Length: 113
Image (tube, rainbow, N blue to C red):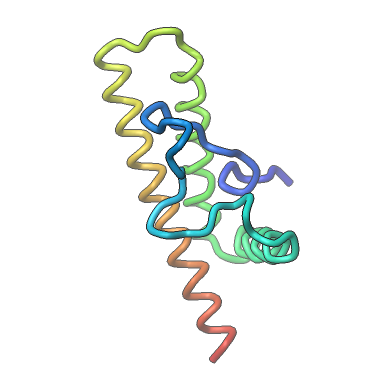
C-alpha cells in the first residue's frame, strides 16, 4: 500500500522562513507529537484510506498536488505562471487537508458517541 503524502511527506514552503512554524490553526507540529499519538493518527488515517471512499479520493488528490508542487520546487526559478500555479496547488492541498481532517474528526466523534 502506498503511504499518502499527508502521512509521510513533510511539506516545504517557499514562503516560510526557518523561524516560522509550518503548522496551521494551532495544530500540533507533527514532530512534537508523542510517538504513540503519531502511530494512532497513522493507523486511523490508514483505516480511513481503506474504508472511506471520500477520504481515499481526497488523499489521492492531495498526493497528486504534492507531486506537482515537488516538481515546481525543483525548478531553479519560477516564471510568474509557475508561481501562480504553485500558490494554487498549495491552496488546493490545504483545502483537501482540511476536508480530510473533517472526516477524521467526524469519525472520532462517532467512535466516542
